[in-house]
Length: 216
Length: 272
Ligand SMILES: Nc1ncnc2c1ncn2[C@@H]1O[C@H](COP(=O)(O)OP(=O)(O)O)[C@@H](O)[C@H]1O
Ligand SMILES: [Mg+2]
Image (cartoon, rainbow over all chains, first blue to last red; front, side, top):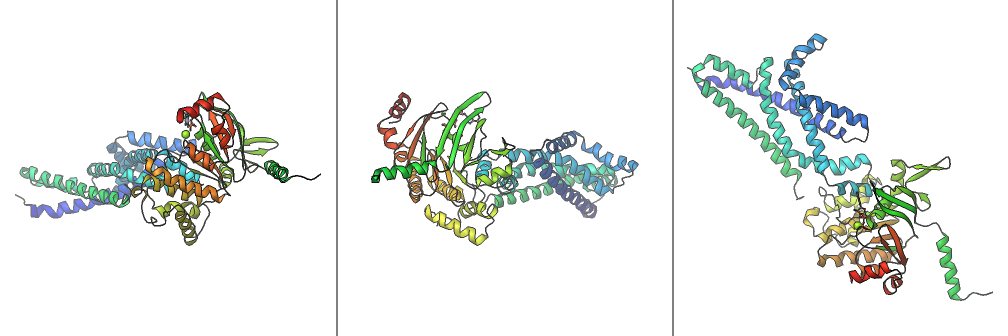
């Protein structure tokens, strides 16, 4: 029979890995989303095309298959990545494609009059985007990005399949050691994911409050 | 032969008409898809001249103003500002579509105030007014602030620098928008129904500010408006447009006291 006290060290190790993968893939996701989301609105067809194809492909593939592909197939082509890098790359590419759509639609949701006022003041197209439109779009992006980041956190449990020792992986090990206590172990697992998701929401709400201070 | 004072004055005024106009529309047409909304507009504004554009809604007044602000491109015809083509450049004797760089340079002379203010909600009042001076004119923070505060004082809002637009009344918002456009010191400014979105009790404060600016004189103003008393008081010339044509124009007394066309007569009857 095991007790919570004995499980904690293993679960903690797993939590750290899960948090690491979540944080790093979130950074890749946000960068990719911002860049490709803005590219989708470029006046140049080729730039729009590139980001359209990126979104089309990486939104449509299964994350698990992508993960396998990056970790098991790339090495056959001479690109060998660590488990951690493979995980961050696969998750980032996949979620970045969803994020791009959030960025794009949030920018499109900023009223046309804002573009026009910026143009009437003779701001350059780049200044219109980054001084006037994007800051307003950012506020709109926060709630959907909050959801996306929680989805991302939950999706990190798939890295168990490339044997990264994340939270889910550790819980599976514990379960194999303490089979009768599966309910408690997995209950604890659910709780930890729930707490991590709550932290993400808290950060998102804090940012939202900060960014929209005084404006509404 | 000696000229009377009156005749001399006439010659002077004829002389000033011969100067390069501030704005000149030549046979400007505009279509949205299959819908032609302007059917060949010819219109001139002299430097410092105040014109009022009146007419039923849907007649194309806003489109005329937006084309000057480069927000809408004419389908055909030309617009010149101080003798220089706005939407075109000459290449080998032919007019070709101008680049964004050309439009950018031309826009330094043009400003616009919108019906719905379009203030930047994420910037405070001062930020709204200093944004373009800093980013477009490259002024230092201090210079931009000085200039902005001067303009905000002019519109009576020097005490609201640190406030977000959301905290202002409609009339105050529109006065900030006026300051924001003025601070760029345009030579011609479009005011597109700037009081139409306001509660009736707030219209007066905005019109008063515009009147004051008009009295300063040097800036040409295109006042698109439904406020006939205001048009009459401020405008040097009133232009009546309907269904994409300029139907009649003249000094305010003539337009309002002695309208010639039947269209204008019935329009004036309807709005009174
Ligand atoms: N962006 C647009 N797309 C399609 N039709 C438009 C657009 N802008 C204006 N119109 C049409 O052009 C006509 C003139 O509009 P507008 O210039 O706004 O008139 P006004 O300001 O005199 O009310 C109207 O019939 C209007 O519906
Ligand atoms: Mg209009």
